[in-house]
Image 1 (cartoon, rainbow, N blue to C red):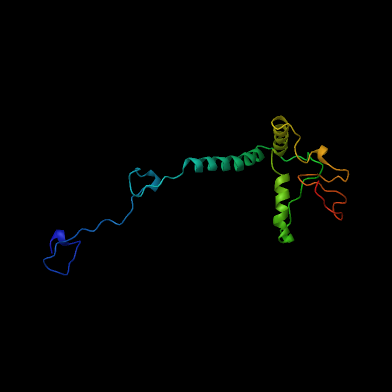
Image 2 (cartoon, rainbow, N blue to C red):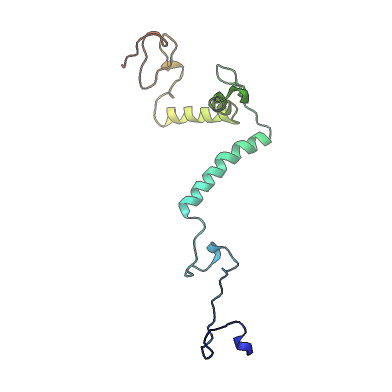
Length: 157
């Protein structure tokens, strides 16, 4: 056997040796390959980059605010919700929403910004403000509630 025939073996003695193509992929990521390469795939599109940037801002700003000492404040007419007990079963997950909302750093600034935008841009007070309450004390939204909230009939106005 000669040196050229070492890597290939054939059943026929006079067969022409064939070279096999390498089965390994290039040692770089697909997005770094040239655009005309068959394996090229762009890593992120423009919309995906914008969504990733928004997600980073959404999660990192409250985290950084907390790290730098901003703590939630009690600015509404109720106490901040306590962290739900894992022993409560599935109620743990439903109570987690109230806790996360109340303990969001800079929430007071967000509520003030929403009030300013609602008043300045749209010319109306924000929903569920003190002027949107009936005599029963129940806040009205798109559907007004008349009578006793728990036992009375509900009617649309």
